Length: 549
Image 1 (cartoon, one colour):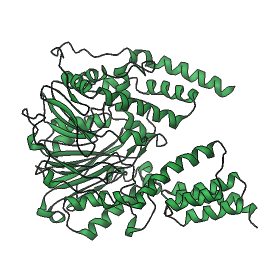
Image 2 (cartoon, one colour):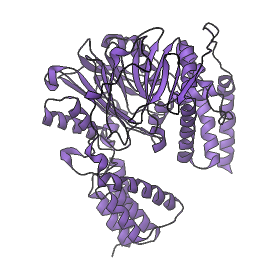
Image 3 (cartoon, one colour):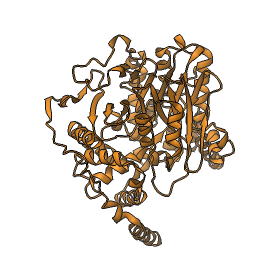
Image 4 (cartoon, helix red, strand yellow):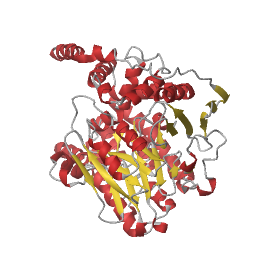
């Protein structure tokens, strides 16, 4: 009863802290021409508005080209992607519901979301407000009770930031590398990255490659999802690239500038590293993030390490630069949260894996960078289990991408798990003459799919994922599986510590303590993802000592 009263008091407090005001916020778009466009549907996967278009390529990714003023870009985005946009919003909120659970908790989480984002509009540039407002007019009515469509879209643009601040909500673990001079074929700058932002499998189904030619600033390419105008990975027509890797953050008190919109502004208005730094320095953010900036003009890359209270720039000391999910700059060397994250997370392991690859390969071309991003093994090619987040490819990334800034070329991954073909886009064609007939793809440069795509091991991994969901859902309800079923489960991914941990829990539920001890010990022999994961197993074994013979 006390907990329920506390919950009610918290709800009343939150509702008095600006929620109602924020829900009434709108955007004045009267200064823009009327956005009245004719949509032409050519078939189920191709549609256009004038020269702007949406189409699905043979690799399964969507390609979207938009041009004009901010409001027009938003409206055309909504018209072209409406079905995809509405589906993506549904997938997101369904994913949150699955993670949160029962309706009472979900309702509280949604109230918190409104309160947390109560002032977010104040930190967003007016032109991006107009673009978001135009886009949001094509949102579904399904979630109108949560908030008006414009406010919901603002919430979604802070989702990446909220997700990595509250790590139980979403999986966010990214790996990036830049190579140049003697580390690269022809000494050109090559940048590669995996973007691991995982809510559920459905969230990554409709990858969207966006070509944006704004009224002001530079045109750019970015890879994200429908309904999203921010940038997580992208390059502009000046050969400036930007990718984001989450750092360790404290839980913030309210949303400020979403990192993805900081990066959007950098791509749209910067052509050099110093210009990018200048833009980032002016921003108030609410989480910690490492932004890798690559530049054709500067022929190198740097890391902008930004957080609510600190700012640093990491300049390379050699002809390569690595970024995972911890800070490397001097400003953060005494930051306790960052240092603990290095020790407890899988970030440093992935950093060392990239360093190991660089030392071994020595000189990289694009295909070698792609194969590094697709690597699902551990240090020294150790088998660590499919889906282990210590791998560069944990088989859950939203997208992989490689940039050749000096050539204005971008290589974009396709399913499954970034193991499919990498399509090559030529940004030299991103101008006011771009249309459906423009040959922006260079087929002769595409990177072939990984041999792992057609392997028996990948088919087993799919079976493993399905069975893992069933087992864990059953365990939550204290339902157990037979020992034979658990043996089958282990056989699908035998190098992964989690299968033994799940088998141990299954044995515990049946009070088969000797069997539980056996499986926990087997788990400890494997490459466990984090130190906290290892400590949980060790704690279980201590508890089980009284049951040993």
